[in-house]
Length: 120
Image 1 (cartoon, rainbow, N blue to C red):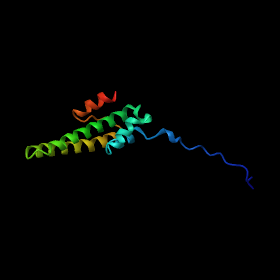
Image 2: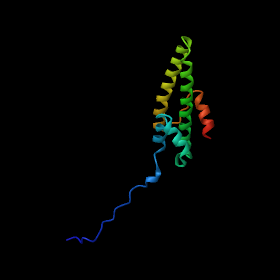
Image 3: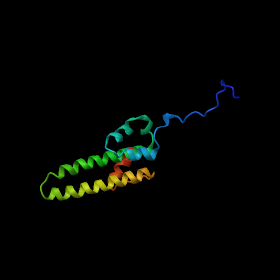
Image 4: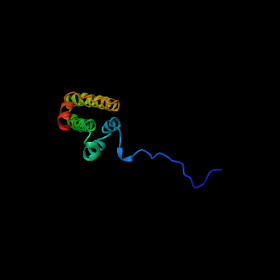
């Protein structure tokens, strides 16, 4: 018979303070602007270059989305330019999520250079 007072040795669970993996945090940064701002503010994530880059790139995409939305107000020519701009931003946004999740540091044309400069 087993002694009821003997407790088997169980390894401790993984530390909860490690946070998210870089690829997951980078992809989550693109889900609205709120996680991107949180990743830039929280000390645990703002020291990771991969996460900082993707958070800043999300902020740049958000700013360009606002600019295209204002252009969209102008009749006819603004509708065309704003529609094309918003479509391009949507494609870049989806590509950024996928590339970040796969661990790649993909730069959006033009905006990626600004994000890289801000993240250093």
